[in-house]
Length: 454
Image: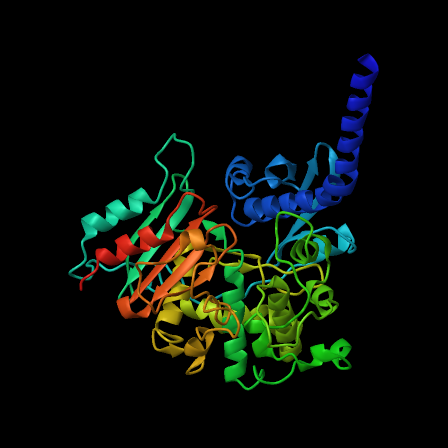
């Protein structure tokens, strides 16, 4: 009996060893890199307390197992998991946080960008470009009911977080009619937008297309693709996630998405190296790689790095009052168009307002005529779910939108960040949070719509 028990114990220990070597160990550097990067951005740009970053931004398994050490003097974060797989991230002024990989720490620390002065103060000008709110609100809205709906979106104080909402803004008829924040946050707190960055990137393409510097219908000019099927890929294919490149979008394991984000200095070149699975335009697959290809192609179209770094600010965000938003770059200087932007809830609402009003903001035509309609056209082979970096249906069927207007479209972030745009209701709703597991966006939006005039 003792010999049998020993053999069973050896088998169990051997199984654990195999699991650690084959499954767990390769994933540790991805987990610690995500932890270091997320903590670094949240602490040094959003100025969040590390304990809140653990409790919110980094609360999902297995990232929640990692531990981070913040160096305030150096503006860096080092993360480990059980003391192993150390990864470091460094914050660069104007460029955001970046993981230390092949590029030296000294070179990364020396990098910076002076975000241009917008030339105005939001404290002195009215909404929507400024923060001076009107003394009266639109008539016909049930504000008592609306306040209750927003209250229900948040977890009560001193309770286990279930709804996990951080901030909400409601825009009706171009006016900010309601907003609410979790205790400790306010209208000036920057939250991670994750894949809502893709929609910002779409707007930048629209600006360049309007200037004749990009053409969505023309095959992209990527030298390494000229001699194979990838050379047929258009910018439109990338905006629609129809590139046909081999790709797995999974943030909880080793995938093309996590290797690109957590183990690549140059995310554009990493994605350029992906082989093809399908003819461009023939299939749909959600891919952060496609978004970062777009970022690199924007950089090539601009052909001047100073103008490239200025573009999202002077060309887009400063023109619509998004003065508290940062788009981060990788170590090679490419905007991480797939995933890395931080902005206030009001800023995200302003972006939604731009799309609600067909690319015109306070009389300023920012997006060319027809670009918003183009951005919300169904992407081929997406079964009606996706458009041009905007979603038409919730990706998770558990959160299916059943009771909202058919013309809804929205920007979608990895952990439940959303900008919902409903033109027929003259409505924009922004919800920032860190999960949708126990949050019904259908009921939330349905209840908001019910408070509006018929």
